[in-house]
Length: 121
Image (cartoon, rainbow, N blue to C red; front, side, top):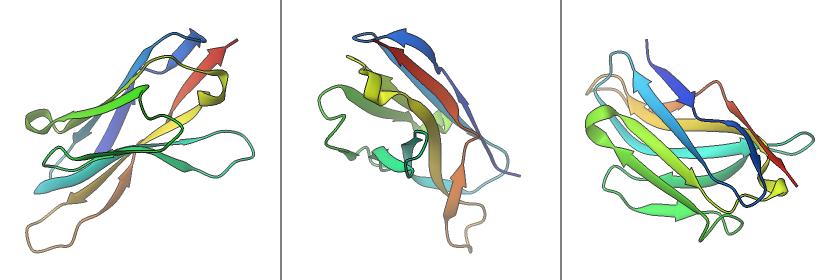
């Protein structure tokens, strides 16, 4: 069974930094794109950043220049370094990974349980 385990959320003052981690565990064949989404109360879940298995990245306009996504393919882990945090960055952050559990199967989306990021002004 594939699981995504997140860590690194917490409370930080505006202007501060946090680093989120998400590790994929279990039995699977490969991971392709991995990414981070966030959802705050009353809003839809939105994409924050994505990284392909080759290292190409994509960011939402709201976090460009402040957040950096990276991954360690050997550890099946994706990271999100968040700098210059703003109160509007506060949300539950979810890890996403497209995982192929067997070589003959298509990849599908897996989600972490979410980690809370709170930014005080």
